[in-house]
Amino acid sequence: MKYVIGLDLGTTSISTVAIEQSGKTLAAVNHAHEAAIKSEDDRVAVQSTDLMLQVSQKLIREIVQFVDCSPSAIGLTGQMHGFVCCDASGFAISDFITWQDKRVLASTDIEDETWLSALQKRLPENLQSRLGCQIRPGYALATLDMLNRSGQLQEKLHHISDITDWIGSQLTSTPARIDPTFAASWGVYNLQQKSIDQDVIRAAGLKPKWFPLLESNWKIRGTTTTQIAREWNLAEGVPVLTGIGDHSAAARATIENPENDLLMNVGTGGQIAWCTKDIQPTDEIEVRPFSENLLLNVGAGSTGGEAWFWFAESVQQWFQEMGVELSYTEVLERLNRLSQVPADINNIEPVYWEPFFQGTRNETSRRASISNIGRHNFNLSEMARGLLCGIVDSLYRVYKNSKNPLTDLKRLIVSGNYFEHHEWLAQYLAKRYRIDVVTPDFKEQSAVGAAMLAGREVFKNEDLWKHFPISYRTLAKSSHH
Ligand SMILES: Nc1ncnc2c1ncn2[C@@H]1O[C@H](COP(=O)(O)OP(=O)(O)O)[C@@H](O)[C@H]1O
Ligand SMILES: O=C(CO)[C@@H](O)[C@H](O)COP(=O)(O)O
Image (cartoon, rainbow, N blue to C red):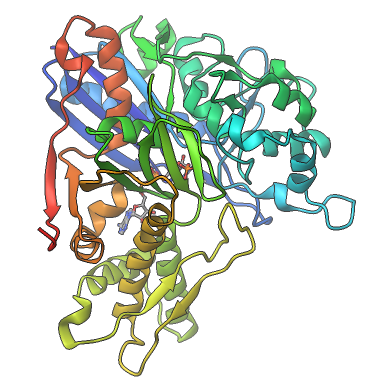
């Protein structure tokens, strides 16, 4: 049997999918990796590269054992913006510094200056139009600059790698690579010239040699080594592709009609995205590379599924303060059930949340607010429901407020594990925004996107892999028809 694997190194979990040459999904597995390393400094967000590697190995071993033969290729995807510092042999000399790291917002020795504001002053004025985005907290360019200027980089730093590149280099023992989607998320990809923007890197005061070679078209970056083959239950010489950013992978796997499809993806983070031909970034919307002819407009960095976990943790703490010990899982599952009670069942007014409790990328000091509290809706089910709706509302609002919405919007595609756990939100979205809501008929959309790239490369002669068919499940119909 011939099949490909997609491996997704997410912020919370790692997923793998196995797709047969015929297009059939053989398996899809998702595991929390628990790689986050606790720090006293709230701004630090780092993960253990060892744990990422171990959980990936475990999942791949499991999937290969399940299918009972080695795959024809492995495609990689994962969380964007972050990086690992590596020495010349590709060995990790730092933890994986993630997109959620906010150390660049700390003050320098100069009054009213943060590492980020100092960097922003040094960068070219037309930055947003050349990169499609501004440099935000968590973007590699900013974090690396902060580490450099605060003397935290090691002498032996040779290059930085995104998380898929680091895993890819471990599997194949090959030099570092980066694709356009990761390079864009680092804040170093020039959209107009389709190349790494060396001027931006120099203006920041960083060394261009620290950045990997750009691989524009997700080719095979190397093949599995003898040692990896033995340890990971793989054959020797399995092709491994250059990685693609998780949001871009999900978009490639789920957008079928670029003129009609609006995509809302919610995992740890959340994004609203649609295709466009022109580069018109705003403070709320980034323009990211997508395909040969199209770009992706993306509203990201305001809120996401993480807010739900935060709420469950808070509720658990309230009970603790009242002397009641409940496990986190118990609280989470209870809240999941409570939130599903329809808001209008007793004509109860909804609670409105603006779930920006951690600030947004754009407005880092913004905070959350809850409004419309009356006598009858100040209870946990309405709070929970209001938060879940608030997360999707704030993403949809970015689209609604954009200057270049789709002229022929036909449906909203929802994807990501958030919707797996709160499928009723589709009814809410359909009613509120008068739009049909569909979801792809497969789980782990980012991993599938990576597997599609792998299949395209190794099953070259098969039409199926040139235009991988996407099937959808209708979750809710607009009442507008
Ligand atoms: N047991 C659960 N109950 C409710 N929501 C969950 C549960 N597990 C995951 N989620 C939702 O899914 C999100 C994580 O999605 P996932 O796709 O795994 O993220 P990532 O790709 O960033 O690792 C969480 O932030 C949460 O909103
Ligand atoms: O959103 C997630 C995971 O859910 C991250 O892994 C993303 O990679 C962060 O990127 P954007 O929110 O900027 O798309």
